[in-house]
Length: 109
Image (tube, rainbow, N blue to C red):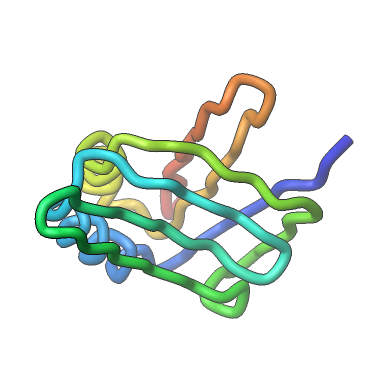
């Protein structure tokens, strides 16, 4: 079974970045590798690509043994981060077989 555990304590930078990326494109490619997490968004006209990369050092826990890539709705991802904004931390789960990304916001208690 593949190992995938990503936990982020301060997700404000990710929230701010997705806010800006959502102004460029509706969807983006999200990628997890053993060393980093990235979001790549492109706009057809004019041709422009924006790339956000966060190394594994930016996370509380980051255990990814294989590359995982999915296409996401930036608006939905941003809205989910907004909804969970009061939480002190967030865990990202990826169900690779159905390409579903699950965000779990944790309470402070």
